[in-house]
Length: 129
Image (cartoon, rainbow, N blue to C red; front, side, top):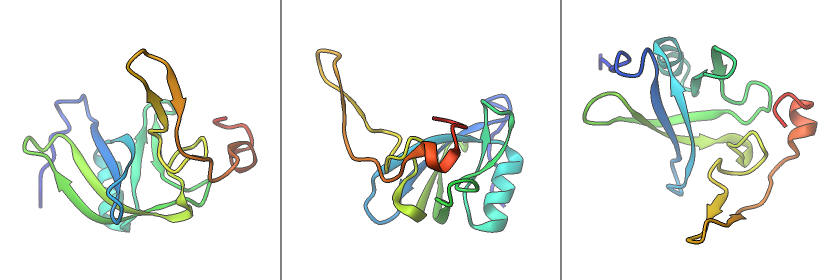
């Protein structure tokens, strides 16, 4: 079995979630060894929440789970790319398809791109919104 290098990041490593069909980058999160094992065991993305200090099963609250279709490790085994099927159409806890919905123009001004798929206040009941 592959040995990921969790030591370099003090027990966590970056995990990029990419839509397996469109190739769109949906989010960047972190995994510890427990989240990695759960992801492998269940076929659904699990992450380490740095904010809450706990394992986070993506979609547990919202229903917008990520079904893992393919996993690719980088050359140093300290970052992984999850090619996923995003259930519900939104990876972002703010309701957008992708967490990368804030376009920064060359002058530093910001434009929101994309549209909201769901209302986070209704889904999370103010937990994150």
